[in-house]
Length: 258
Ligand SMILES: Nc1ncnc2c1ncn2[C@@H]1O[C@H](COP(=O)(O)OP(=O)(O)OP(=O)(O)O)[C@@H](O)[C@H]1O
Ligand SMILES: [Mg+2]
Image 1 (tube, rainbow, N blue to C red):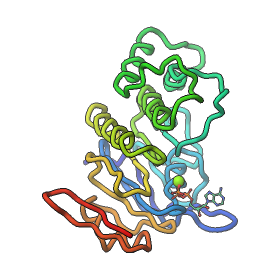
Image 2: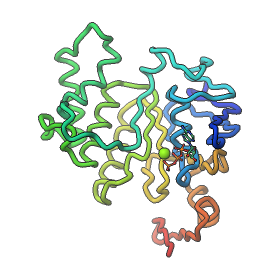
Image 3: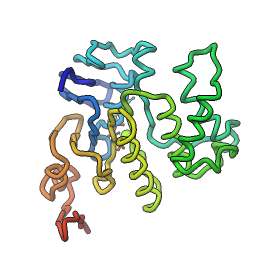
Image 4: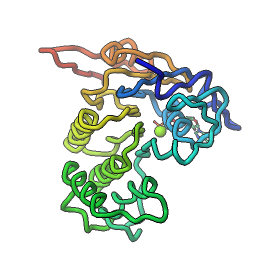
């Protein structure tokens, strides 16, 4: 498999009031699609922030085979796309959806080159793929949560990162839009040469392309392996401290809880 793209060893994050991450060991190879699953406060966002370079940590982190401190070089930062947990945007914030997508190209082009025709065409194609092309001239703040999430995906892909970090990309969306975003994420993973880390506390919202699950609980990895094994009654009931029953019928997985 070669050198892992992402490699954490003994990674710990300490805060005045606790330890959001403790002794994390994680290796992710090129092209993998890894789910990071755990309850609220498990440390999922903190883990993404460590990888993206927004969090001080102890231990060692290698990205693309190179040792990294908590600060990222510009080159490394550009190779990591990050879709943060959904943020409310001031509806008056003066940026159009199409302009928001174009900011994905800014880092790669540098401050002195403005995006050319090629970049604009790519942005349009991505907006079409995400089915938000018709919203190009609408202010970003006026878009719905789901529409904004799809704009965020288009923006992140325009950046052409090697690693794409997604933090709860389907939270707060209705069921139909959740499914749509998941299938878009699946399609992106098939089309693009990218490694995906997909954070969620909702184990019913896992895209088909996700093969590996890392379960986080109270800042520690409690399971790392096959999704089918992770999504079992026993493991999930323990992780979420609530009785959850998973059963299979006609090859499909169903979840039942009170
Ligand atoms: N800057 C900070 N200062 C102090 N504690 C923090 C800080 N950031 C995060 N924490 C704590 O670290 C723990 C993990 O937080 P984190 O945001 O990583 O959880 P999460 O798994 O992403 O949860 P959620 O599902 O709610 O998004 C939480 O208990 C949180 O309160
Ligand atoms: Mg979080």
